[in-house]
Amino acid sequence: MECDLLILGGGPGGLTAGMYASRAGIPVLLIEKGIPGGQMTATELVDNYPGFVDPILGMDLSEKMEAQARKFGVEIQTEEITRIEQVEKGFQLTADSGKIYSCRALIIATGASPVKLGIPGEIELAGKGVSYCAVCDGPFFRDLEVAVIGGGDSACEEASYLSRLASKVHLIHRRDNLRAVQHIQEKTLREPNIEIHWSSLPVRVVGDREVKGLVIRSVKDGSEQELPVGGVFFYVGLYPNTKGFKHLVETDAGGFILTDERMACSRPGVFAAGDVRAKQLRQISTAVGDGATAAYTAEQYLQDL
Picture 1 (spheres, rainbow, N blue to C red):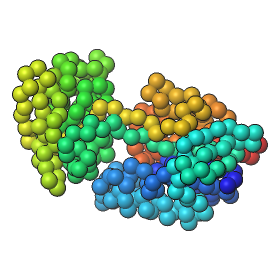
Picture 2 (picture 1 turned 90 degrees about the vertical axis):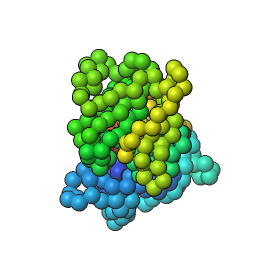
Picture 3 (picture 1 turned 90 degrees about the horizontal axis):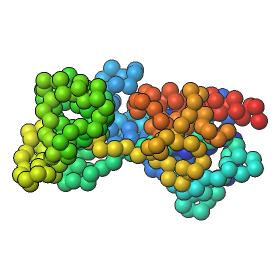
Picture 4 (picture 1 turned 180 degrees about the vertical axis):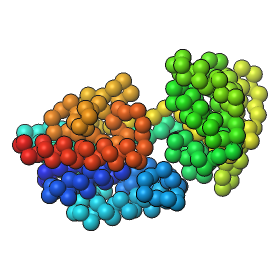
């Protein structure tokens, strides 16, 4: 199957790119391996997306974005792409089904995924007190005790953010010193309602339909205690969904795709949008902005061809 513009990934960045490009008269094919919406579909409530006074279900917002993209003519296929190669007239994508897709320009919007520890309760209570984004979900835990897992920049920054909302923040770190840069460490250590549990590991998230606590274990003596938290935020890492095309464009040390301000990648004809990019903030609103910009730049690229 051939098209002018192919968008890989159906999260907010990909759907927005598709809508903008299709409105500009470009034939667009969007390929998503799962349900359109990306991580929005796994978010119970979204209360920081502009235009919605009351919180909206993540699945509802996903469905609205998908319907709007389809309204403007975006064709959406369900496939998992395993390989992308540059060819004479553009790019060739191979799906796990064996089907081949070709395009003249490509927007990569495959997102990123949080590293999961896999402890009991983590997966079962995801979206029910277990979260991987304090900026997204922090306000739902106002005046409650919460736990943050990790000791790097993200964990410390999010613990500081949560300290302004939660009654108390338990920061769980497996070492006896933080890995965050010095000024972030100092800020975290100054917060009066952050308690750091040094040399500790999370063992189990407690709860049935929602989080009721977190069991942690000392790496020094093996003793365990249960913290009475209503939310657990995991910050043990994030990895970009770039399997099958890491070779195609330049990335940073973490594997996230490097772009310029126009969302253009190192290889002409390839653009990136959303969480798969190397960027400071990963939110629905920033992915939407990336998608709009990527579509506009891709349109100019195709016109130049």
